[in-house]
Length: 430
Image (tube, rainbow, N blue to C red; front, side, top):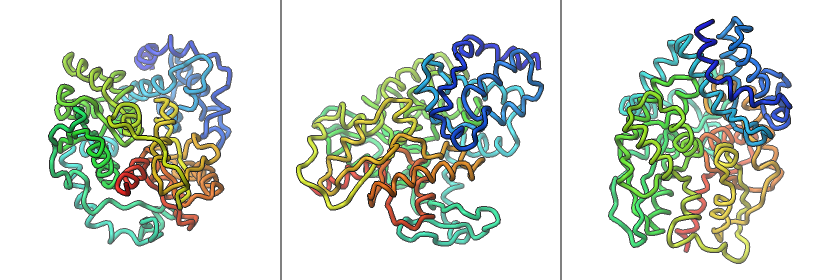
């Protein structure tokens, strides 16, 4: 415990900034669901204070309470003291994992598979061939399935793996320069590559129609978010180093992603948690972080020619938008996706209530605490249904998965699309 207390003491100055005002209670979606003080940021920060003073003798219990967090950033976005809550939680999880060790199952998944992109690709490609045996159709319109073993997954509606992942569809990893003079590296991300390849294809199409050439190296790895969530800094550093080799910063002008979490991790967390990297790698991380943009942010703010004004008239399809937490709360990106959505003549855009409220996914939180995640998601789905829309767009594939699951169980038939898919459809129609 003394060794752990010394580790956590590194956070002491940042912990002292918290005034224990309780403002985080008013915005935390998990606290709204459970009402437990240990589920809100203030309670978790108090636990870390207790570790420093050795008041808590159960580090595994503290780790469990820290794991009960969606990492949505609502607390940090609304904190009057400016406490960097997500940074603290990430580092605290890493300290606890360093002290206790990584669970054997997590070690297999995170270091045996996730940290080895080539092996992960082969494993999931084989899995995609077997998934029909293990699942049955749940909602044909939304393309979801249910497990054939209902005792394991009695409620969840899955979005199946794509028959062909995006990395198998890339014809030209490095396209010639367009008239804009800009080249964009595309960081695809795991979920887009393996479940939503059509999103990556829409990104490529939108960039090329804006005269931006693309650089899409094969064998890309995960951004490291799952490893971070488990405090696995070793696996995280291996993934960062792998992706740095694929994306030399001098090879492109901007690095774009279609995943809100990937954008946040590369821009904010790679520079924060790069302790296992060499001095040269750390310098490259900083350059790459400065070049990273969400696809909507880049197309609206930087691409030439610009997106253009929304067309006059009303489209036939009613569309609403869910703000991914990492995009809006952590990166302050909210206007640009709406600009893209309103650039299509096929849709009429309508805001839903609480558009920026967390959908309840939280990455691995959804796997570990599915019932709570699903319950939080019901509030999001109720707002989607009340909007009267037939399509809901968002900029995060994890949000797409979770919203699709909860929507599919309502039988509403509402489509879930990525923002860039809607925008690309509009470009193709022009």
